[in-house]
Length: 346
Image (cartoon, rainbow, N blue to C red; front, side, top):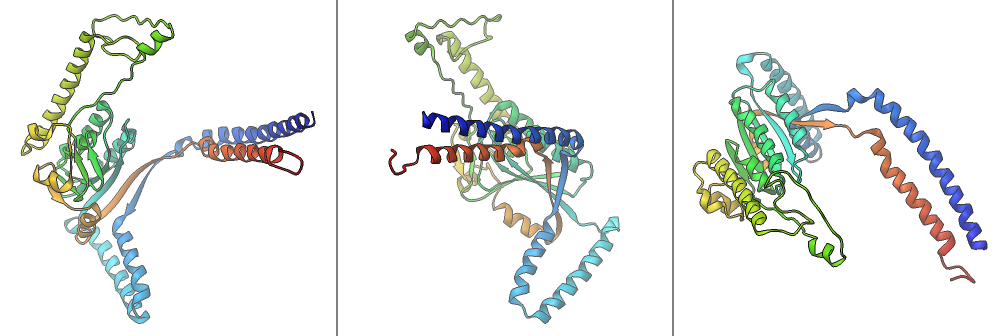
């Protein structure tokens, strides 16, 4: 009884603390959400040339004599002022390179961010400017990556040079995006290709039968449902499903052939992937190079800007980890008090 009383008292305290914490957080979150709705989305632009310059200055400040370092810094400031004056003269403007980062998941959820970045750059970009897209994706849903590829095609339609860089992986849907580019560069061991289509559907029909559970599905249209998770697969349904997969695969192959006419599509459309070196031999990529090397060299003659469309997380979501941590701490304390081994207890 004593143990139950302790438990009830501790539980009551816990509920009180949780409620006292939740209500103010919810009120603050609601107010902040209304006040900052218009501030959730914004564009961040970082000057990559300045980043490289800062890295160089950090090393020089340590390894050079102070006098020489100060002279270099003065010279750097004069060159920057001179460069700013030249920028005001349209005839002497340097080439601009705009860099996007696309980290794709199965749903291609980065597509909304990509479309905003493309739109923002197209409002100012003109020849001979260039867009570099660093893609990292193992692929995913057809419609998502198809739309992502279409967003990149907007850049080419405006006659802006498009370069895609693959440092780690651009497979399946990732390569669907990459092949749109005027030029594809890849690290020697980056994973490239996998021009194939995959569908996985678990089927629980036999499990339902085993437990005497009826599952009924009603459809209008002969092929509204070909293969489902709960109904018994039919030969006709499976054949139709495979027909649909083959059609998507054909569209994928045609898209690659359209954008990479030198590629032997029949050879690379087996669903296999290749590392960068082999992908170069198959003409899936144009050059073996990392994005870091490409951008560092380009910075000598171009102004490089990293463009990132940021969608701020709602303030209520920011409190979720803290709230989860609070609950965890309370439960840990309860376990420590009541179930830890003490003298005379087990």
